[in-house]
Length: 277
Image 1 (tube, rainbow, N blue to C red):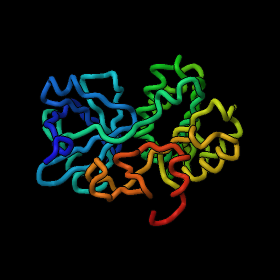
Image 2 (image 1 turned 90 degrees about the vertical axis):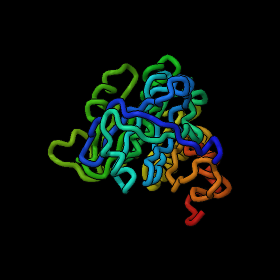
Image 3 (image 1 turned 45 degrees about the vertical axis):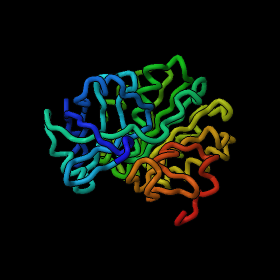
Image 4 (image 1 turned 135 degrees about the vertical axis):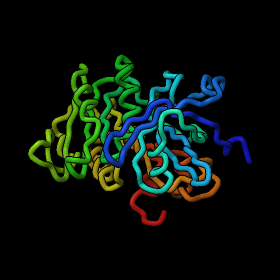
């Protein structure tokens, strides 16, 4: 087994149930030296491993300068994630990573940020939002747009309310289907764009979520003359090995696990919209 495929032991330090099928695990590598050496960029992911069950790719949502813990938010969608959800404080599991290319934290400096997320796409982008909010002097205005299918899919309500209180930050919420308590609008995420002051040459678009939503955002932002190199997408594919070896996440000539999961649209354009590519 290569070193890149070796999981290291991690311990659950804290756990939180976000919704009945969504939970967060705060982990720490049991080897103190390895934990101190652990580095990542927002948008990268780890492979979390349960012996006898398998492993799954999970985005890292903690801040890269917090060297003491590694946070993940996970939805129960199969046997491995169901059993990760049963872990309690003190339990141990395997962790290998980080893998992939994360968000463009340096390339986006000095630009306004339009962060668009859909559904659980909010988990990978939360790491970038938190990163930018802690370093606001490096970035311009931050527009945060969250879309969900149903109003009850909206999680981290308190976190979004907190983000509203930051200067030079606005938060927009929308659902395909709302209810009487839904605090946002109903309809697509693109409905808000006319209300944003988008200067195309100094705007970076950050998005994660269903590809139908991302396709609508890409089309709109291109019409507003935002350069393809400043439109960034976090792609989801069936990532298995995490090192571009097994080919399960191949997207054209690229491997999502190794070359992504974050790409700018100039890189994806040759393959975008082609089924089976």
